[in-house]
Image (cartoon, rainbow, N blue to C red; front, top):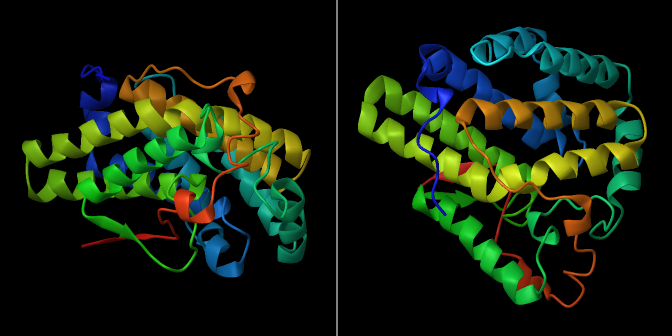
Length: 264
């Protein structure tokens, strides 16, 4: 599947190192927030400069329409987080996600659109291929599958961080490799299912922190897709395959994942 090479990413405002790091940090924030809520995972929301993050994000998207709505969503995320005890967040998360794979708002890409377990395995292999192509591996800390929303968000964080480093140290060729990978991963994976996932997660949450998180995720993905010039077939609710994992063994479906990536 080809990726449209023309995008607004070539604008100076979108390709500066600062903006790349700001967008990278946003993916990292979302990655942390969709893990089980523990102090270590959510410490990123307590950082002194978190409230400035929304303002910085607005500058990243001012060439297309600005990020005022995303800034507003993040302010609500921060406000609700500081007002909610960690025990209550854990209770809400368990209610939303359940004790097994949720059929209403699954955290895993291959529960969207996969008609058969063998197709799931193929998709998992493709995702893992992206990770291996960049010499990253998954840690043993969280032990989530490679198609978990948190893991995919963490990979986008890694790519943007790597792009910023390449821009400062390696020049155009290696920078473009990172850009191409982001566009391809958005088009073929994260951009196809996360917009629907955010809607379903927010619906199941009903109120509070996780509704604000879902709204932030949906708006961020919309802006990212527009900034990168990506058009793809975003899944609809009718594409949610509630039975796709029913016959899959853990060995089949677990190809790795985790809290963070480490360069080999």
